[in-house]
Amino acid sequence: MVQNVTISLGHAVIDFYMNMLPSLMPFIMKNFGLTFTQVGLIIAVRAAAGSFTQPLFGLLVDRGGNGRTLVVSLIWTSIIMSLMGVAPSYGWLLLITTLGPLACALYHPLGSALLREGSAPERVGTLTSLYIVAGSVGYAAAPVVSVAVVSKLGLPGTLFLCLPGLAVAVALIAMGALDARLGQETAIPVELDSDAEGAKPIFDRSGWLASSGEVLMLSITAILRSWAYVGLVNFLPIYYVSRGYSPEYGSYMLSLFLISGSVGTLLGGRLSDQWGRRSVTAGSLVLASICLAGYLNSSGAAEIVLLAATGFTLLSSMSVTTVHAQELMVGHTGMAAGLMMGLVYGLGGIGASFSGRIADAYSLHTALLTLVVVLIPAVVTILVVPDPHWDALKSRQASSSV
Image 1 (spheres, helix red, strand yellow):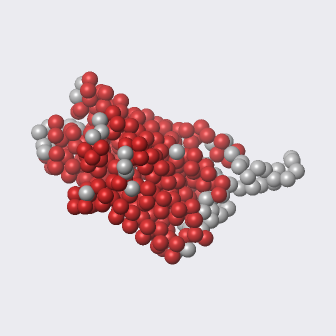
Image 2 (image 1 turned 135 degrees about the vertical axis):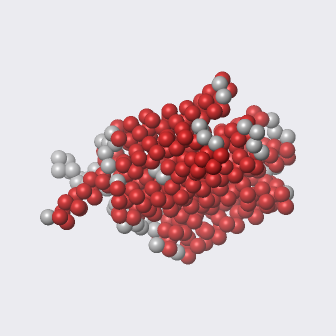
Image 3 (image 1 turned 45 degrees about the vertical axis):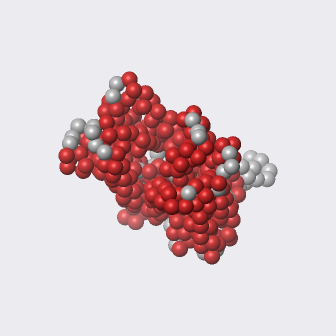
C-alpha cells in the first residue's frame, strides 16, 4: 500500500515536470529571443514526445516492465527537465524538451501497470483514480512553483527543481520498488497451444487484438472527452477576458474547473468499482454535456456552480476509461494505460484546435458550445463497449445468491 502511494506521488512529480515548460515560456522566450514559430515548435515537440509515444512504451512495459525502469524514468525526467533553464542554445532546448517527456511517457503506463499489480481487483478503479489525481495535482502545482523559483533565482534556478523528483526516486527505492515486477495478471501470458508443439510467442497479441474494435470505440469516447477537456482548459481564461473579466479571475475559474475535476476523478473511480466502468463513463458524459450547456447559458452564482459541476462530471471518467481499457486488453495493461493517458489526450488536443478555428470564424462562445455537441457521440460509443468488470460483479452476485 505504501509503495502504491509512492508510485502515485511519483506520478505527481512527473506531471509537475511536464507542465513546467508552458509557465516558464515567457522567461525562455525573452532569454533566447524566440519567435512564436520557434515557441510553437517546442510545444509540438514536447507534446509528440510526451503523448504519442506512450502506447509504444506501454507495449514495451508489457514485455518487461519493472520497478527499476520506473525509478530510472523518474530520475531521468527530474534531471533532464531541470536543465531547461541552463540550456546554452535553442537547439539544446529542443533536445531537452524531447528527451525529458520521453521518460515521462514511460512512467505513465509503467506506474499504472505496477499499481494495478499491487491492488485487489475490487479496488483497481479507486487506486487508479488516486494515481491520476496525483498527476493532476502535480500538473496544477508546476506553474506556481516553477515561476516562483525562477522569479527569485533566475532561469538557472530550474536546477533546484530536480530535487522533488530525486527525493521521490529515493523513496521508491526505500519502499522496495527496484524489486517490483509485473506478475501473471499484468504480464503477457504464455500458454500452450493444443494444436502445436511448444508455447506461443512471448509477444502474443491475440488477447487484445480480438477486442480491437471494442478498444477502438472506447478510445473514441476518450478522445472526444479529451477534446472537450483540452478545449475548456485552453479557452476558459480567454473566454472570461473576452467578457470583460480580469485575467486573474479567468485563472481562478480555471482552477475551480480543475479542482472539481480532481474530486470527480476520485469519486468516479470508486463508483466504477461498484457500478461498472461503462455505466459510470456514460452517465458522467451525459451529465457533463448537460452541465456544460447550462454553464454556457447562465450567469452569476449559477454559472460558477455549473462550471464546477462540469469539471466534476467531465473528469469523473478519466481513470475509469484507463482501467476499462486494461480490462479489455488482457495481458497488455501498460499499453492500455499509454493509449488512454497519452495518445487519446494528444488526439483530443488536435480536436480542440478545430474549436479554435470555429472561434476565429464565429465566436468563442460558439466554439465552447461545440464541445457540448462533441460529448454526445462519446456517450453513444461507450454504450457499445463490453464491461468485463460489471460482468464479473454480476457473476459474483449470482454465485453468492445461490
